[in-house]
Image (cartoon, rainbow, N blue to C red; front, side, top):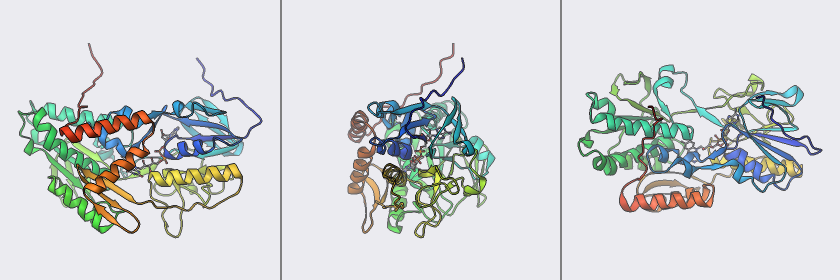
Length: 419
Ligand SMILES: Cc1cc2nc3c(=O)[nH]c(=O)nc-3n(C[C@H](O)[C@H](O)[C@H](O)COP(=O)(O)OP(=O)(O)OC[C@H]3O[C@@H](n4cnc5c(N)ncnc54)[C@H](O)[C@@H]3O)c2cc1C
């Protein structure tokens, strides 16, 4: 069988979008009333809601709750074509991309292919740590956490199985540490009455001096306080130097025995070859101008996590968060549609992180608050942002159920069946 990408040539100009994450999806939707032929290419046939990966990894939500089929989103869009393929190279001299389904001509190319985990060149950690940068990795992490508990019933290396080390004190590290602490308190003692669950230790390790580095001092201190009250060992100003799958070596010489090291410490852009190496930053982001145009390429643009727009307020590029991706996508779509070119200006709507039941921190422009109200705000904003009415309802039901019962219902160890 030979494959071809099979997109019809028409008189319309063709925009090819690589990636249907927050940026690619918003950009494609904004073009609905344009005169372009729109081609969306993603490796997966679904859009993923990354902010809730940690809930999949801790049995709070199912993968299907936080993913949405791309084809369903664009069912009623005219002249939209979707292909599930890996884009591997850009040949800008002939306006073509290479994909796993063959080559495709573009009039405009929009790179919205996001980022992946960065291990900062530490190969041992890369080999043994568990990242959480896609829904598959989140499911894999849940599997490891549950399997370790099963093994702890019968193994003689219980300490290693019961220590969980989370590296990176940003929102992801904070949120998963809090969720694990709640599993330790409310779930594992009921599921595993034979295990002394007080011996489960959760460590959150952060190299800088504080958690939630991009948030206010107040929120950062409050998050630490919440986590410590929940029994998490928070180690700031501590770097992880090495990990062999059993022993975590810290910068101060200490060693922690652990079979599970969750890596939430850094990301780097997903590289597609063909773009000049001078256009990349050290973390593989693509340098763009104030219109998201890739420098020295007239008809290639980059959006979201992969793009790096240096501005006065953000000299090292904007934060790699969903709002930046969405706002850049809307601005670029409007510029291309109207053919009037407005510079991108990021409107920071604030930031937040949840630590656990009734515990969250929220930073808005002029106020910072925490606790129950912050937790409600966090839930409402996430429910509002998730794609699809059914997904919203399923997540809402799961959250209410967990809140009332102190339980999650999704602790399933699905494994490939071997006869
Ligand atoms: C665990 C976690 C928690 C987060 N929490 C928050 C949060 O609470 N708030 C917040 O604002 N942000 C959060 N973020 C960050 C946020 O998710 C990203 O900033 C956002 O997803 C960036 O959008 P994007 O469209 O640039 O990239 P992505 O959403 O990563 O989308 C990239 C898309 O490109 C596709 N792709 C990649 N390479 C190729 C290729 N070669 N060929 C074809 N397709 C390709 C991928 O499959 C993917 O669909 C979190 C991220 C993670 C990982």
